[in-house]
Length: 392
Image 1 (cartoon, rainbow, N blue to C red):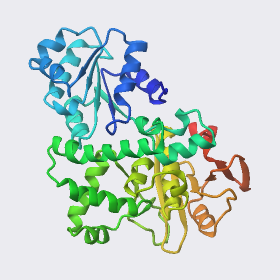
Image 2: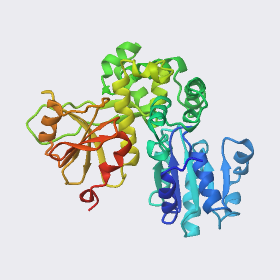
Image 3: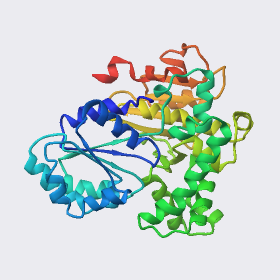
Image 4: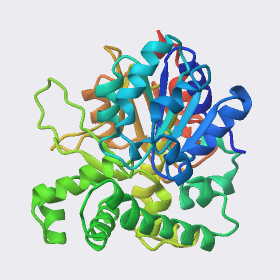
């Protein structure tokens, strides 16, 4: 079993909150993580999968059933299928007056967090489980390429061959469009949403341009925005916002759009193996998005925020990490074994008055490029958050 870094975070939260929620895309490993927690730490926990009719029926009288297990952790999977549970969970947790009452899992529901927040305010903490991270795998140069190519969905990454991995991802996309989206009450033709998803794949790593994308799809700009929000809320798309400064420069104000999982990106682009990926025009943007996901996946969620920076004059930074009033961290991402400092990096580094910068690349050596700017192997991105000044 692959040990997920989120496990310890969830265990810590169970010691301090009555309800802990793990959210994330389907098939990303939420159920497996909850089962690991159950078998290793809460052997007497009760597990309910609301996609299983027999478990769903147990909650016909939910209060009666759950009260029977008032001294145990109850794990409820796919909780978005029964949103009426949230007010009851509030009542039960208030009467139990203890932590670790419920571990709830949810996916593919734009309204899940809103519904639970309204009912469980002050009683619940959320953790998003991302696709597999490089830091969670025993990696070498081959496994890095495999994770980049296949993405981080466990069944995709662990497939015996690239062909089986591609087939699994293609089936996941179909299931998402034909079952998951209608199941949460959203009525968009599957073929229309697939076309939009494919168009986004070709715009991966670029600025959001609603009119251009809407024109390619034959819909209005607000409709395109609605589709984007749907994919973002269901953990398919990451929207990276621009970083604003009080400086006299014309700043780009549109967000950058990335598909969260590189494997799904490659499926939509028709990329089957590493040779096709390395020769594809989107290899650079794919690598950038993949590295960003690796960095944000290990970034401490408390206090930290992430952005990109770009001006109309050409200054640009792929990733800006901000913590309070401390100087921001600047990160450039290069798919080359000979990273160098570009003019746009120098200008952005100066604009942002950054304290430290990194150029992440696929090599093996960590070394300085400028004062406070370092070439950083993708396998060593944990160094980004090792500076003690960032944890004061």
